[in-house]
Length: 137
Length: 359
Image 1 (tube, each protein chain N blue to C red):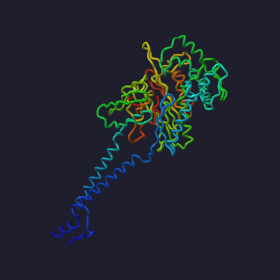
Image 2: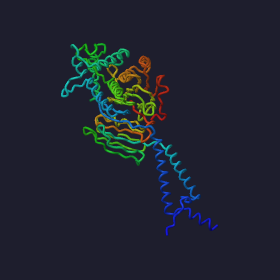
Image 3: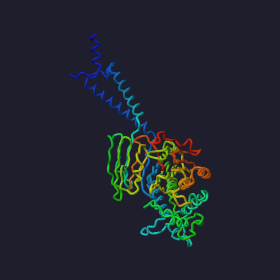
Image 4: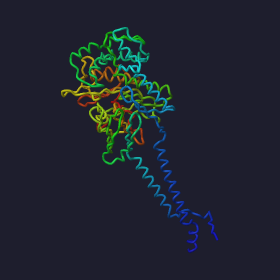
């Protein structure tokens, strides 16, 4: 014989269990607050001839990580990613302007290798309002 | 008492079902939290269309918001390419010569001149006015000199007699302009619009945005920037000024609109016998300008060509004389001298936010 429960009498959780839910909500609110205050992550982007070939989350980089990039006209570059930023470490291009740009550390900054048609730039992962819209110089 | 405990047990679901409901509630709570979080972080944020191309001997980066943003950005690329075709002095016979206004004008130097496009005519008019106002510190007839120094190819220090000969072929007063007809008075003269071209390219791109329902856009042609309309949430545009003395940014300009360009001695240079030669030539001497400045950033409210040309003129003139020139054009500027001293014009005092670290 199946014993049917009277739905009016059913309580999902007892009074003793409700504080557990309050704790969950408080923990969630705490995580949310921490997340709001955390610095926004930065993404390093490499474009060759206008096409994105590499996207690297700098927060995920352990130490310094270098990567070879094949630019246009046989020009070879090496870019380096670290938690501090990204840079063009070396380039076989004649002018080395990209290399001289040095370390990029803020969203919106970029290093350009014109002969190799390579752009290394940093972009904010989330909040665009704080990053530069463009760089002059 | 025993009856009470029995009632309480009866009122609760079996353990398995309660665990199920419990997981459901927990999942729903987490989903809600992520949803609110996403909503707060991306409220009202529409994604722009971003495009990087290469033109004018530089890279062209566009960020465009609007209803037909992709189409507008692509049309802007065409407009910039078309400008380059019109104003470049470099010959490429395999591509034909139609529409090559400046090349044709240079080739006709000393003869009866050439017909130029109306847009090139307007640009020349703007440029010649700046040549005059800057007392020749900006000069569009430096073609013979820039070819000699060859900063875009294999730069070298020319001999004094070569410089003297090239200098004799310069002089903006000998450009005769009448609408779409232009003439260079002496054979061997050559116009080089390199000091105004990237800014003019920003003008072309902004014209395209205006005609294509773009709500907000920023275009960067090398170091020249054009700002159009508003960002989706109406914030100011933020233009970072490169630190001429090292890595990173000198500071940030917060602007509502207009055009920004920078001329800096660090952009193109070479060293010979321990001396550094930069690409910004003084039309009066034929040598790289030595005004004590290493970087000049100029904002102009309406013209990219003027912001670009003014930054070159100011670099050549030096700080003191630049201030009156900028006032004449209702422009503003940020100057960095050899000692690293940064000077901003009055209108930029509240708009230029210096990086404390200087990095």
